[in-house]
Image (cartoon, rainbow, N blue to C red; front, side, top):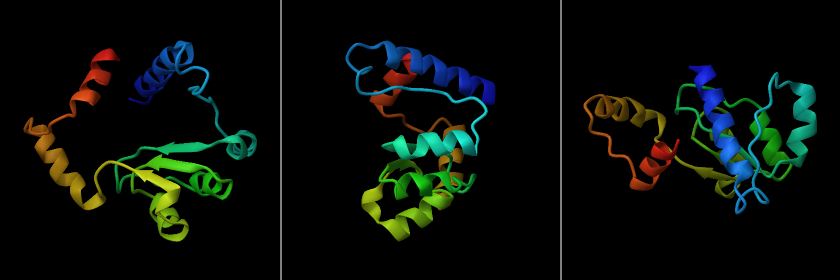
Length: 129
């Protein structure tokens, strides 16, 4: 599963990084062997941190805290450290999406029944991928 996600990130990156309209504003990069030394260089230079785990399943760790301390915005789910960051730093530090932890089980059950409507715009993204 992780290898498929890495492949997806790299493929999306090829499209975005080579698009004449977006490439001058946005770059996608996958950093292999991410570690503290790499984070020390990247975090202060970052404007946005994306954290997209399913609520209640994964901790986002302290990297997101460092992003916010350096003025970065978080795009992510209400999971792990993101919950504390939003409480302590304010709602304006984060763009939240996805369901909350108490909603996950019902969303998963509906999806198994085929009762999970996907926004048409998102469906177009899936088709493009």
